[in-house]
Length: 357
Image (cartoon, rainbow, N blue to C red; front, top):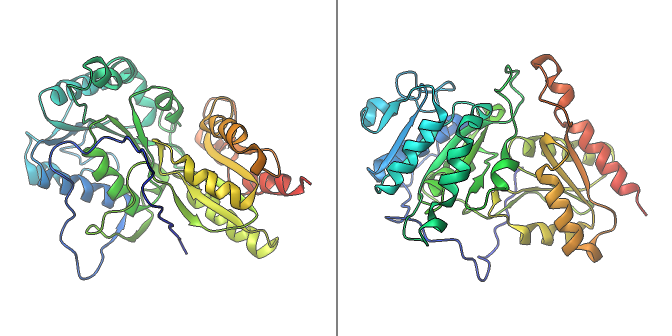
């Protein structure tokens, strides 16, 4: 059973107020719809476009085809080609026109078709999108949400399964959101679209078909808040996106076969980072394993491990361990399962940290 523990807002939180009209929930439904993550994202886009006519959706194949994963299906028919339209195969141009639209007061939601295709847009994102609010001393907002189907696990070909989050996290000025459930996918996207800052919204492709009841009438946790998906007492597993489900599976196996109590903390947003939630969990368990798909060296787990060691050293019973991908290029599809961190790799780290005196 998924457990979410919400904390009160942190004092001194300087997250800017949403741009334009406040986010308004849709009317309550008598029976919650059961949606896949792909459907939840589609619903979020539909509701955001219906709520504010400044919201536009565009990218490669998002209109006529409805997106490679059919995430944008029906939006062009509902809102017209002026608000949901196809673009040339030019990722740099897609982000460039989104920046221009934001300067003119629009709220663009461009899609980069696959994570590996973000590289051609890197200069626009890093040199311009991330810096405009600072460059104009806050006079210009950048309400741009770049949706990127991300991470592995679907047996795709080269450049279609990458973990790019560290690039964006190293770039000041960008928020980074990574949903793990359909409900989070809906609300994180709605909140991202109303943000005054640009958001890189990474959609875990292998979770597109996960489904659950989604409440579109009651706002979920805001950007910058983590969620405890499973409470535990022995070890904290800090992860996000597609690996939350992996961590929950590992926690179930650990409980049944080893009598280990694993707490699973889903970060949800990597920037802003809810480090207070990390600290609270670490103080309860004293042992931490950080898990992410990307290569081990300079992955986000390295930053988390360093910060935990620096700020929570006296709360730790053992060194912080990392369960990650390997320091190699992403492999061909037939080797994907060997490369991705799974239940076995995580439980090995859990066992090692519990063996520490």
